[in-house]
Image (cartoon, rainbow, N blue to C red; front, side, top):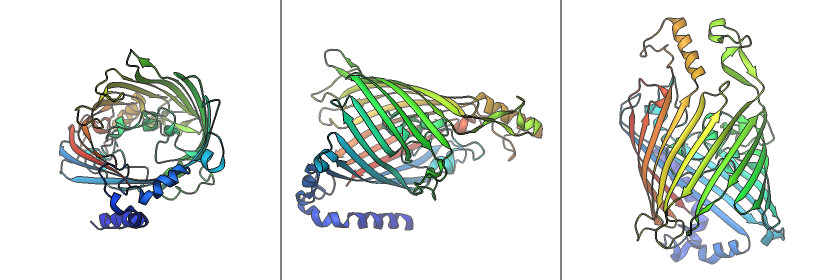
Length: 446
């Protein structure tokens, strides 16, 4: 309760100068933001190229049944995003120029950690609160400059940004982490999504409106994902580099020109990594007691297809869309060698609710067979075959997640998203009873 009071106080402090300007537009059901137009100041700033963001998102989750620890409880996590977007053409005359900076603050506790997973074998990528993790602290997320040429056919972006902001980015419509954002960031161990920024650059070329190719190069710095390293932006902790490439196709189907996004990509990370099973001689290191083989890098790839297939009402984006997503990691170094997801999103399910949507998604995260083999060898070496023995190492196979939710757009600045989730075999441990979770997400744009 004290933490909630502190967070509420912090929010009021941030909003105090805005409340004085909000006057009669505060809490307007038609305004874009909860604090309104600040007496016209907000529109004037945007007209001159200054656009400010303050967004709050909370997630709650309750374990109804199943999980490693079946003691029922409720967990709450939240996220604040504070940022500014500058139109450099309006401000400095830099044609097609943009600058963006943002920081991200995360707080709370995670139901997956506290109740659903076996601490000896944490979940591979299916946390039931996707805004939890990467350290419950402030992070510098964005500090980048972007410039376009040739009617936006060529686009260059440099600075601090999460690699998943531009690569393998399919958006986040779900509360379960396995169905949210870039899949490559879930199991590779070296790819960062929001809120972790990395210094780098991305160049994108679109020879035609329906095609693009982009490539990126980033520092790999896991120090930025820690509580104490979030703002050590001088390169401290830099271990290697991350190189990415992606090809994209943006089809429009049929007479209604229904939009789609199809993409394929790959990545390579230069940082050294331990083999998950073998030593330098190709023998299991848990038996030989030798050091794990060191690899000079890691790699992976992904494929995404998202396509709107029907249209309803007067809004072009409303209707049924389907998606499928696959990410693969190299079997030498990754705990999860592949993840696959599929689902459907129906926008505007009712004539009077054009901004609402209902979604269903399923995801499978497959544990690397070589990781399972290592656990089997450890248990055999110790003479343990009882899962309830504290020294037993769970033999991972695959974990599965599913989510059904309805997203209710109450006002342009307030959205509520109740959801039902299933987490089967958390961490890939088949001994754990499948967990049912009831959750809810609230998003407010101030």
